[in-house]
Length: 304
Image 1 (cartoon, rainbow, N blue to C red):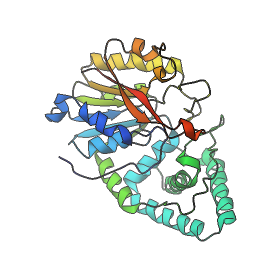
Image 2 (tube, rainbow, N blue to C red):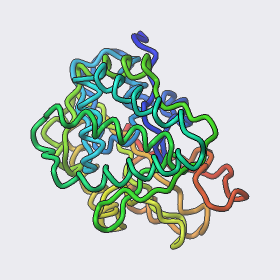
Image 3 (cartoon, one colour):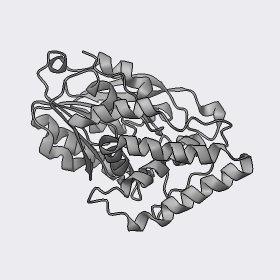
Image 4 (tube, one colour):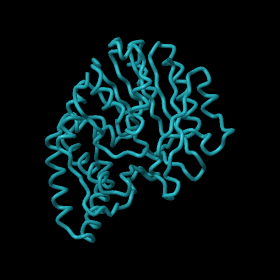
């Protein structure tokens, strides 16, 4: 029942586009049979899974959560003011591409500085037209920074350097409009994953994509928000997974597999011992050492 061919409008570390086929093989029967009316994703990130499933199945409603304020803001701008956002992106892109390399570098850092400087003036609790240029800046930085990362420092400032792409594609008007259409049956929430409990019932399909547990002490990359996401948070998530299971919801979760590094590390095997755990191959693309950008296993956990 594919309705719209949609893809994420953001580059995102740990994006799940490459795992969509694996997830599609593991959807619950109730979803195939049209018995599930609500999709919930407590960690929205780049949204690859949301856009895939909401363009394939006819959900009555979707609820997306994230603790990252900029994601929350940008998704809402795409949903509510996509044409104004596209116009703003065209203007930034035209200015950027008209410059030589040194000029582009200076322009990138001027946008990054403005993005960080104006953060304190943004009211993330009430939608406003001032959100549009901020979402525009985020998308511009996302398409022109190194590896399309979103990373913040301890003060919450975006600190990814310039990406040095020769001819970056920054504006995707049709993609943004398709994504905006898919967001019309969707409410985007700012908050902790546990807040999604209100919308999770026996008629819900829930996909959990938490910041991945680092495979080694030097491999940590979960600073999409100031707080990070440590092992205590992973345990709290497992407890929430059990709560959702008791509600009768159908649940799917993915995470890094620590056994890639240490075959004796059974962290997730213990946390999700009461559920179905599978290991599937995936390519890890974000690593400073190109020789380590290869195929590794990730885990998929389901309660059905």
